[in-house]
Amino acid sequence: SQQGEEDPQALSIQEGENATMNCSYKTSINNLQWYRQNSGRGLVHLILIRSNEREKHSGRLRVTLDTSKKSSSLLITASRAADTASYFCATYSGGSNYKLTFGKGTLLTVNP
Amino acid sequence: EPEVTQTPSHQVTQMGQEVILRCVPISNHLYFYWYRQILGQKVEFLVSFYNNEISEKSEIFDDQFSVERPDGSNFTLKIRSTKLEDSAMYFCASSRAGGVDTQYFGPGTRLTVL
Image: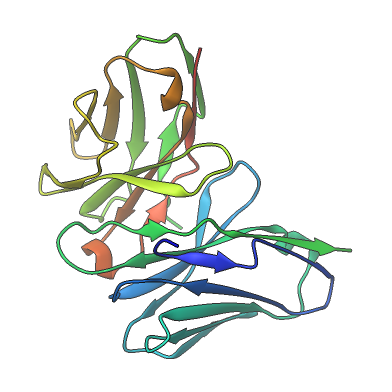
């Protein structure tokens, strides 16, 4: 698998439930960023977590990072139909290339 | 809140034609990027740009591609002779401080090559 692989590939839940998406990566990172993409639209930045951080919160979002396991999770609590989107993790490995490497994403469907 | 803007939102072109995709990054950002996403696939890095030069380019970014910052606000991606496989959504992004900082993405330009 490649840098930044999310699972599950698709997740369907009911409104009000929590949604957890996972991301694994291969090489060491400087930071990991989560993005949301509504169908056919742009990428909206959600959270950036640095390699020396273990957990970050933003509203209903909670991101954890385990560098020993090279994995991250995104938890959305009390989901809403408007949370329906694809969620991507993207890693920055450091250096002067500045590039983000994206995973394939998790398609989250929140049913009303 | 400042945001990255891109024009046009959709571009249709014939194979072999040149296209220029335009982006206005966030005004106090210094690092600029182009990514692309072929339908149903992951977002792929094309090029990063800082201090008026390319910092890094991927293997996708061959001689048919070029980037330019023609003035203090615009950042462009030119594809000299489009191919069918160039059909994709192209995203511009910018950040204040390179890879250690959040990259903010524009809404994308959907390029369709016929």
